[in-house]
Amino acid sequence: MELIKEYMQEYGLNRCLSVLGVAKSTYYYQLKRDKPLSKYEHLRATIIKIIDENPAYGYRRIKHELLGLGIVLNHKPLRKLLKAW
Picture 1 (cartoon, rainbow, N blue to C red):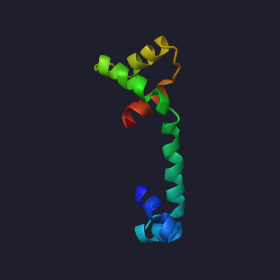
Picture 2: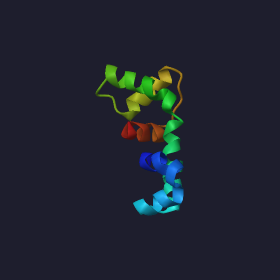
Picture 3: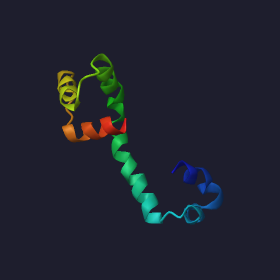
Picture 4: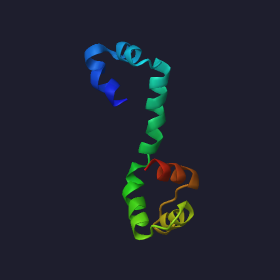
């Protein structure tokens, strides 16, 4: 994705995608797919702090710690965030 963004201004999106053999729909799908995690970026430091203090904690205990801090977060996005980070 970064490679396409780097050369897109100079060569255009269609040419970059055809050289890499990537469909335009795939490119836009990947752009859209990456955004949901950025929605929770503000929680990253808090979650990392919890993990550093308690390295054995799983997503259930981390969720409980977040609730103690007043942060309500469903377990589904929390698990995705932990897997991605």
